[in-house]
Figure (spheres, rainbow, N blue to C red):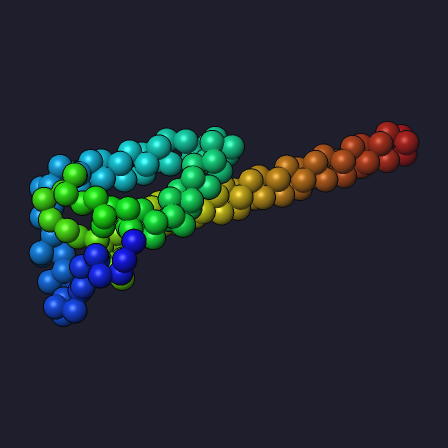
Length: 148
């Protein structure tokens, strides 16, 4: 694949002008956002299933890793699924509409894991303190029964 097949983005001055030039009603973009929403819902609904979330996290990071290859493939075949050529050589478009939402989902998953870990550690410490208090009370009861 040759580099001159990509669209140059030299005419884009600001990020907002870039966003305004995107035709958001393109069916494949709607499908992509549906994908992102379903991944978010899946991550949210499966937050108590660690193995599934680890697999989902790994798959999402693989998608981000291969986004450059996806960008090249989409740039070569954009006429098949899109009305406009969005896939530039710098990868700005795929980074904004594909990789960034995936990475935000991954960050939310890591945040959820950290929160669950702190809750688990707090519950463990509370259980340890209760056990320690119960043992101390048993020792006091034994000492009182020996004294009598």
